[in-house]
Every structure is written in structure tokens, then in C-alpha cells.
Length: 607
Image 1 (cartoon, one colour):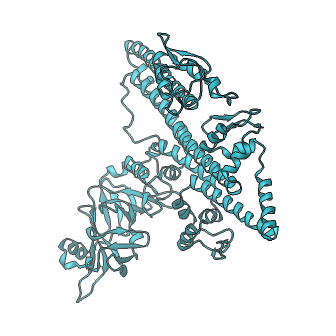
Image 2: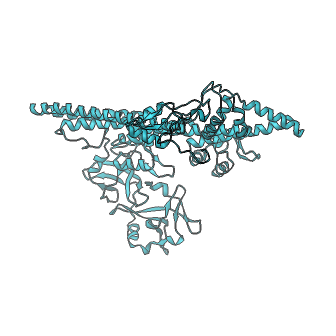
Image 3: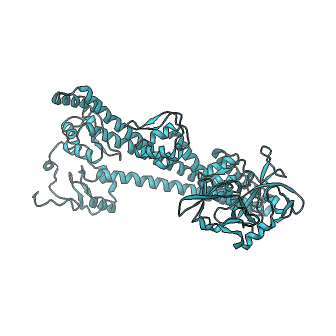
């Protein structure tokens, strides 16, 4: 929604020409339909009509301007009898007292809030009155369907005052009747607590895992790139083959390439390259990237007759580029470029940011402009500009986790009074000061991802909201239980039995959930073991239930062998028999006399 005073004075821009041609002077409001009809742009005089923009002609309302298709959107008020009637009546809303029909003073009208899409009036900002905030002296009056405006007073139904009362813990009538059965209460409480724990945990864990994976991938990619810049992959393999591994080399998927103390073979090197771990294998073989870089610098200096310092500078530039690429990858993995720019624009740069060609993007102490942010993105310096604006990755991660949790418990704001305005980045108002949070406000907050801001606006942190939800669930269950125990003895006995049944049902649900998690974990482990086994030889004969040979000693594990072993119920036997060490003997020595039915068929060239 939008605030009326935010629109006043805004420039009106024609979309077809891109030019500003007038400004908004007032809003034309119909009290009978509770609708914003038009924007007044020219008041008119004795010999001229007032000029307005019908609300349906508005293309967009932005932070700085109102957009219309063309200048022709402005029409004379004489062409709109409904709008002319309202202007002729000359009702002045500002300063009008709002009172309920039963005589309660709700305050003096100073502004209004309206839906930016439909033009419907959502409510009024008032000063003083029955519900005035102690700090600002203002409150929010929800717009009724009927509003009778007189010369000094506007009357609203008495129910409006009821909607302005803060109801901690929820809107009146949200609790179910005391006569509901205890079993329903037990199951509902159990489901909510279990759902709260699982959902909040999954969201936070999912965000952390996703970020961790991205950071790990970015880091590994940067390390591989840095090593390849100094030493060609073919040179790394040639260096490693035949040497003894000083450390165990493991790929990112958990596959062991070679163990410490083993001799590195061609197969190990090719496998390491395939798994993106060739740099690790090179280092495990005793390779030193820094020493190799120094050797290349010295050789280059001797051959070309160039000073070592010059070569070192170029190598330093390479390392700097790699370092910069790594930093950019890290930052992008956590925060998108769009978010980085939005964060930086309008903030004061803490230091001077300059491109490699010497062009200064922004000086220290200078405000960061959209043009500077766009140029920083083109120059590959957006991450540095983000940090210069005060951006911190760990703070963003914490904020993301907090926002994810807030999205789940934002319903705790329902029934509470908003203490400060909640706006989106585009200027839309999610909740107004003094407004009582309803389901509509909560849905609006979810739509614009402002759940955390809404909780803060009603005086709740995310942690407090989580505790309030848990306490509310327990209190709801306790209240229903107490109400039920005040009924007849038969109902009490029946309720006790139902509680036991509910508790047993809840325990069964928990066990089912735990079992499901264990099964998923077991499947994941099995899939990893299968990936590590494919293409490797087995150290024993694998037989099916009919004693037919699936794989013989030394034969390679295939997809067909995996499927056959699973059908025969011996998949675990097969996976436990995989030869994980580097072969120290020839293929002919490993080859068994009898081929298994799932073994790879020898090609004609091998016969």
C-alpha cells in the first residue's frame, strides 16, 4: 500500500516521451465507495477546469515519480462527473475528527493509506484519540466500508474501535471453543511443535549447506586455477607418477584417489584429473607450487635476459588476479550482484575504490552512486565496492538465516500493534504505525519478504517469536485441557484416554520421521559407495542365490553387476569387496580364468 502524503508533490512522467510535465497536488477520494478516484494536477480557476489523472490511467507509482502512458492521461474534471461532484463538494479530509457512532473519539485525520493497485483506501493515519501512541501521539484507523463525512466529524461504525485494540497472541475468536475434544488439542500441539522444529531446522540447515557448498566449490575452483596457471596439468601428472604419496588424496565427493605411502600410478593421476584433484595429487607427491613458480621465473629471466623482478611482478599480478577471482567467487556464492549493488548504492564508501587502469570509481568518504555500482560490476570490482560500503559476508549469512526463520514464525505478529512503519525497498508500505497486524498484513509481508521487519516493528525478535509460538502452542493445549476437565467426570475420563492415544500417535509420528531420515541417510551412503566402486576390481568371487558368478576375482565392477548384486541381495558383499588400493600387478595377473556373467566383454583387439 501507499501513503497519501508520499504521492503529493511527485513528478508525473509520460512513458512515451520520458519527460516530466506536471506534479501531483492532491488526491480525489470518494467516501461512498471508499476509493481513490484520481490525482489532482491542476486546481483550475474562474475560467478554467481543474485537471486530473484518473486512477485507472496510472501506469506505476514509484519512489520518485508517477508514470502515465502519455500526457493525454490528464483530462479536464468536467469530463468526469463523479470526480467533479466530489471536488464541487469541497470536502477537506485533513483535520477531520473520526468518531465511532457510539461516541468514541479515534483522533484527527492527517493522512490516508491506499492500495496502489486497486485504489481502495486501507486506513487513515490519525493524531490523538483513544488509541494514540504514547511516543508519537498517532494511531492507525482501518478504513470501514461506510464512512459518513460531515463538516467537522467523520463517523465510522463502532466495530472499527474493536479492530484497533491490540490482542497479544492473536485476533479475538481465534481460539477454538472449550468444548473441543482433548485428542484434537494433543494432536494439533504435537504436529505444530514437530513441524516448527523440522521446518525451522531444515530451512536454516538448508541455507547453511547451500552456502557451504558454494563456498567450497568456489574455493576448490580457485585453487585448481592457481596451480594450473603455474604448472601445466600434463606436467603435474608427469611429476606425480611413480612417486610415493606423502598424504592421502581424497576428491570432493569422498572418493580416495591414493592413500599415503602408496606409489602413484598413471591411473591415479588420470583419476585425480577427472575428479578435479590433480593439484592435490601433485602436492602429495612432493610438488611445491611456489618453488616451481620461482624456478620458472628464474628460467624465464635467464632465457629472455629479463630481470627477475619483472617476471616476479607478472607472476604477482597473476596471483593477484587469482586472489581477486577467488574473492569475487566467494562473494557471489553468498550474495548476488544485484543484492551487492542495492546494498552499496547510497552508502558512504569507507575507502577509495579504483580500477586497475587507474580510474577511480568512488573516493573514500564519498556517496556511492548507481553509476559507480554499474561501473564496478563491469570492472569486476563490485565485491570490493560492497565491502567498502560496509558489507560483511558473515553478517549477510546471519541475516539470511534470521529472515528464513522469521518467515516461519511471522504469524506471531498477528493481533499486535505496529510501532514503526515497514517499507519495502521500492517504497511500498507493508504496515503502518499504529496498525493492528491482520492476516492481510502478514500475507503482504510474505509477498515482499519483509517478515523479519514486521516482527521487529511489533517489538519481536525472531528468537522471541519462536519462543512465543512454542509457548502459545503449550498454552493453547493447556487451556483446552483445563476447560475440558471442568466438564463431567465421564468427559474427564474420556479426555484422559484420548490424551494417551494422542501421545502414542505423536510418538509414532516421531518414530516414523526418524526412520525416514535414517533411510534417506542410508541411501545416500550407499549411492556414494556405488559411485566409488564402479570401474574398480573386486577381491573375491560374488555369487547370486543360485551360485552363479556375478563377478569373479579381479573383474571390474559395472552397473550391470551392481543391479545383479542388488537383486540377489549381495550388494553389500560386493561393495565390501572393492579393491581400493592402486594395483601393484598386471591385468593378466588379476584376470580370473572364468568370466562372470556381468563382466565387461573383451573387445576384438584384446583377444
